[in-house]
Image: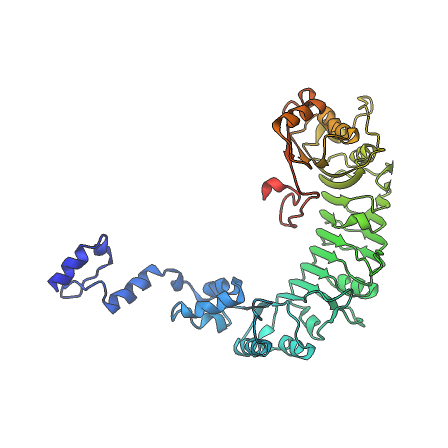
Length: 473
């Protein structure tokens, strides 16, 4: 025993890992009882209550949650207990190998778990009857998050929606459906708790969609991405704060949705239009007093009507409504068209950030003098950031466009100019002279030209304060 104690003492820090019996004899480090005692002292997490540990397990991906069963006897029962609401994700990684085997595994998980369920995600196609049986499992009671988003099939073809998919409407807080064909809804389902809804490449009639949305009385975030069967879309909600939309094109490349009406949305803060270069042709916005972010406006929108303001092809502007709350604007401009952008600036008087995707066009004249007797409020008081993409430094209309903001944005803090070609420092210095950076209206402005291979802005999701700001990534 003395030899063992001496060996233990020779190990750095060993005294902190040793314990003494009642007879004051030192116990070797490799004693099984000591190892178990030390694990108990070190593993403080395992001493937390079941509901706390269960919440941790429930947030893990399915396979990782299942692996917690081998951590210790304390963790072993949690994954299959009501303390850990079920989080089951069935995707390509989960289903690698024999499909029949995975059907059995999913069925076993659902039969063994007592419920409730936090999330059920299905991103792999299985026989409709099998999916329906899974969704009717008792363990999915009180489901909060449902995703049925199949892999895209050829063309506009969609998988049929499982009949029981909408049975969770009373408890759902988030739902996503992709490449599904909604049945004709005779009675509109009610979603009293649903806050997030995403429809991606789904086939649904206008009446069914509008009826479904009318039942979402707590909805805050809505995303409609290339949905099939909608010719005219009307969004009206007292609760929606964020809305994104992408139009669908049929096999002939024709945009099926020709008009988007956003009205009576008192809480709407963000309106994101993806692929707006293809449409819809007409967008009307009324009753959106809190709208702060609007984009992407482009030539694909032939008529934009914010309130009674009419923006025809974002060129001819009839300014009868001023949108005071919009602070972030994203524009896709052919030319770029300075007259059109100036018209927008007059409409969005409190604009703070302007993002412009430029598509150079030879016959565009952007020589414009700023009239101090007809000031543009956002240039005088609010515009702090301008980002311009696809600057080549050769076409005069592009140079004059950028130069206008350098010389007239009086409170500008930063201007980023994305150059399409890799250039040396000498070329960059020459461009700064052409833009008259030394004569900039705001002495605090940092004006940067840099090589940028991205032709458009990447949207980073609703959670970001400015979802188009690359510096925050």
